Image (cartoon, rainbow, N blue to C red):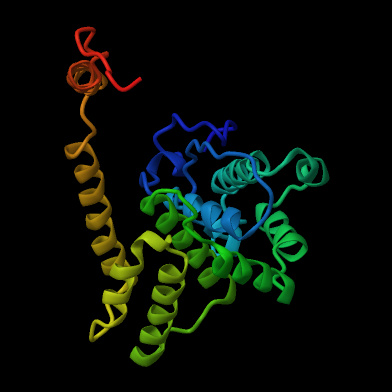
Length: 262
């Protein structure tokens, strides 16, 4: 190997022989800046796994100390992952981590410092779930907002779904939370769902209610009030008819009639 050990154009360069899916090949990534939280961690983990780079975080991709070219390539990819992490956090956190050099170390520090889960976090999220109501928004907006909170809660508390009974229990809790937050206009349909045996899943309940919402919207468009012009024409015709009756019934006194008693 020549003195330009990092030259990727030479045929004997190990980097040029790497498969496209090899984690030592860099790729671009575009992530939005955000605060460190469960959502950020899930999004970042998914992005890194998509790029086959999560091994730089969980330390399963180790630096090759026997080959200088692969060692340099590891350094390059580590820097790429590091830049992705720094590019996805807020400016305040960025200033505190910009001098870090190992991607796994900054990940562990951010996780330990900002991704702690305590009782207050669980309480606040559970409170959001149980206090969320439809309150006039569309059924779709309400369902997807609640579904997002459920996913955050499941990821936070890591509920072990190791039995069919436990899964059925959590499915029932979600169904009850969803039905409790519905507007009163769905009262009769909610009662029908609750008396169904066995109880449907929350997705099935949403599908039933969504069809009802679509039917109501269609009905509102079908049975519209008559146009204002036609309504006014009807009022005018009624007024003319009433005026004619008044002119007939309310005639003045006959001048040819005289009272002989006065």
